[in-house]
Length: 486
Image 1 (spheres, rainbow, N blue to C red):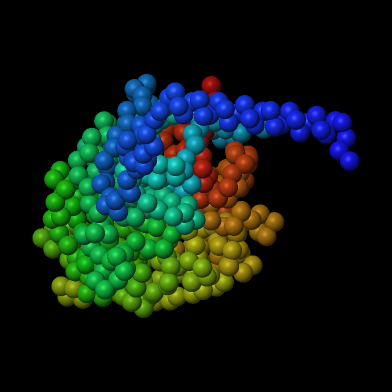
Image 2: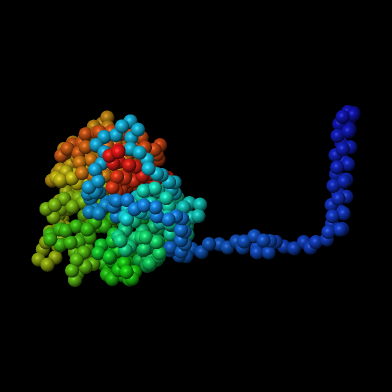
């Protein structure tokens, strides 16, 4: 039997339903309209179009602010002006930190990645990837304030592969060059961001027979561009081992044949003078090579060796003196010493020794630093008892360390960056703690440490420019004042 309350609820519901139906019938009779198929563009919505696979490099430009004040400081490319990761700036830096650590002058949010900054004429340049827009962006900031001045960008579809951007731009008074995660090159005016020329290295130097001709390594491009006497130098692999591009025109002026089909690695090209000859040294996937960097034979392959061939290499080659270089492999591959010999009018390369990460100097990611006769290295996770330690080796012996920080002093996963200015070294661990050391020949003394940011994968190379140290983690860029407090 239905209760009085339930009967009342049913009656109200029926009345509401009847009234609703009557209203709809009246509306249809008094306000007739046609029912038509919804067509894109006919319903006041933008027409939806699939984005083309074609990448128009540097297509878009945004002006965001005006330059405020130019302050002193220069870090124009990967590893600085002299390719050694040592600042030669005469600006006096603090000898100690108080408990508050170095002051954070400014910070900004980034897309996930590990690219580092270049600094020139009071401006900071950084390659970034905007995940929402799906766009590569070369961004320009004021060094003094962190105000973003402009950005040049273009659409490029990418899937997250342990972050995106990994490279550092190269900048001079006249040219600014970036290499994107999928090997897209832009050359801009460094002041106003005007686009001068572009190259799609994937398209131009594709590998015959490979899917989409892909030359870019796994985890995207890690090779930092090089500007040498107004010539941009790249090592695409594929159809050319190395190329030189006239920065004023964008025309390729020399190519090095790739007869051994060496592949692009995460390495960067390092200019060196070996046997009295200036050359570009590159540790590719498949071997190590030297290409002439001067004279009538510029671009000629001078020597190569495939006897050192780790599957992955990120740290760039170092010149040790005595016509010898050190090279490094990732994931336990270790390192090797290679001698370049002069033979009549030619050259040859001999691997003198090679070792696993447990038996000598090794680096999974950052390129070691040479000070005098010593090499400083943050050892990787797979380096046995020395794992994650800061270690010093002699240039004459890559196997036996002279000093190490000790098992009580390990730094993250052994992947963070480190940089030198005078007798000072700054080391950033993976989680955003900055360590401040004083170098004394083959040892260092810890002066201070400070948690700068609750960071994640703080692996991007740092830069020192004047009073400022610029660092990042996976999603934040920060500028610190490491100068003497007034």
